[in-house]
Length: 193
Image (tube, rainbow, N blue to C red):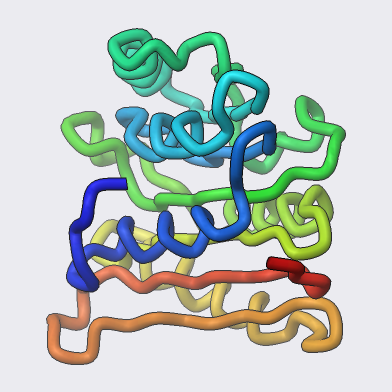
């Protein structure tokens, strides 16, 4: 993980996952996009691990595949052209880490975005797949149409999670614009270092 500092929401999301996902582990990139989070997860799981990467856009999966091939990680990753709300159809074993990087595909069609309904369902599914001690990191952007609603629905859902079973934190950039991304991290109770 290249040092990016606290100014990067993606860096923060990845940092929390790097503490629970290691060699031989299983991770999910719920929003493959251009593949950078998938690459990050693949670097952590090593040759014995597995990463599942979801995206509804073929161009996103093509970009991700190329990036993985350039780094020699393609065999560690299963690319799936499906919405993240369908992850339980493809992943059955407990997972260590799940990352969501919401919004739209950078460099792609900004009219194709994540949405509140499917994202909330996907996060609930991810929590069911998570092993004790596992974590879900969500980078939430509010600048696209529907982004604010998605953020509010995620905040409402995650705030209501039972504190005996989940630890939830939210990171906001206090000295940046209201459109700066937020990070939500959820840990399933049972963390062991």
